[in-house]
Image (cartoon, rainbow, N blue to C red; front, side, top):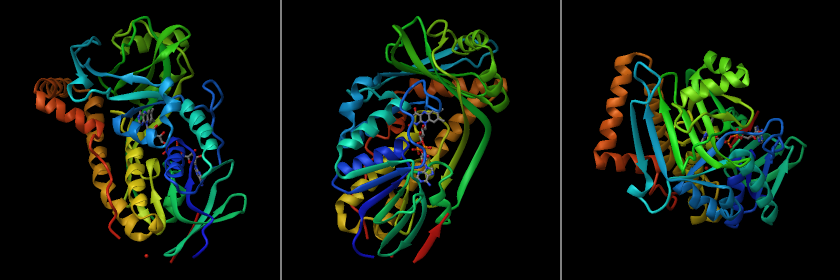
Length: 414
Ligand SMILES: Cc1cc2nc3c(=O)[nH]c(=O)nc-3n(C[C@H](O)[C@H](O)[C@H](O)COP(=O)(O)OP(=O)(O)OC[C@H]3O[C@@H](n4cnc5c(N)ncnc54)[C@H](O)[C@@H]3O)c2cc1C
């Protein structure tokens, strides 16, 4: 296949796909990014994504490289301290509070928190400024024909694009992954998460708080003040039926329930947004690549929202893919590059998925002896300094960089 229309087609305009378009566009590749669902870029609009993303240190470096950080910095809330509370005693009050301070391992905060709807707004605006990137909302990938020499992508408007590489950022049910015949392993926990924003009288002071009792973690992540009051994003995981019950509670009863579940650590919580419900699963694709196709983000891996790993792992995918493509731009999308991508990313993804699975199970336990063992484990991890620092570095993924690449027809369609 000769005469490419562009270097890369990115399928998916979620946060991962938009970042992929920006970072490859900024690096000099010509990119077309498509998504059948136009992005919702206002907080209170129907369908807006009220989750927030805590970008950890390596992810921020990539956003910087994409030219996105200067747009995002003013909206970002630094996360200096991660506080973990065990409230797994017989009563709902906290019995163990441990703070992990980023200053212990770094002169920068652990990360920076940003609302997903705002990320989409700023990322779409940024893509408009990049001559090398075309963003086409309202259009999806319909099918892909892959050859050793290149890929032919057919879009939902009937147009076709010849390219070197297709990046599948088309989400957890990725049609491109299915069409390539890549199977997945999925774990279901019977849990769901509520994501919403709150205000509170006690300032958060850039401390992110994760509270464990049973059913799953309750996490408060700092946001900028909202309507003159300190504000945080909340992710509240519980077993599915309980989450649905909480989602339907009248507002005053819901506020009382979440204030108690938060151990009143920031005072009484007031609801400051809609409540949105997210299913919790863990999923990993058996392979991260196929002919001319790279799976990234939730098309490749889904983890429960614990330790702010999901999108950060996605940006680590992009980091490796970018470094490999840059090393030999003319060979972008060739089998050797994509094999190297799989080899470099798969072990880290599998390890993180396992770690998050274990943390999730520990947070969910109901039996008192298991809750006691969890508190004991937290106490030990925190009090042994090398263990504590090692854990913080592992959580951040610091030092994880891609490097140079090593060095192949299949028709795919939905
Ligand atoms: C409650 C909760 C809290 C979280 N908090 C954090 C956090 O603090 N930090 C963190 O790192 N991660 C977090 N995560 C994970 C993170 O939100 C997800 O990893 C991330 O939003 C997924 O992004 P994505 O771009 O892969 O997928 P999506 O956002 O699902 O985007 C996929 C896009 O692909 C499009 N698409 C579908 N089919 C096609 C097609 N045929 N062609 C083209 N496009 C197509 C869809 O329309 C969609 O827009 C959290 C997750 C949850 C559930």
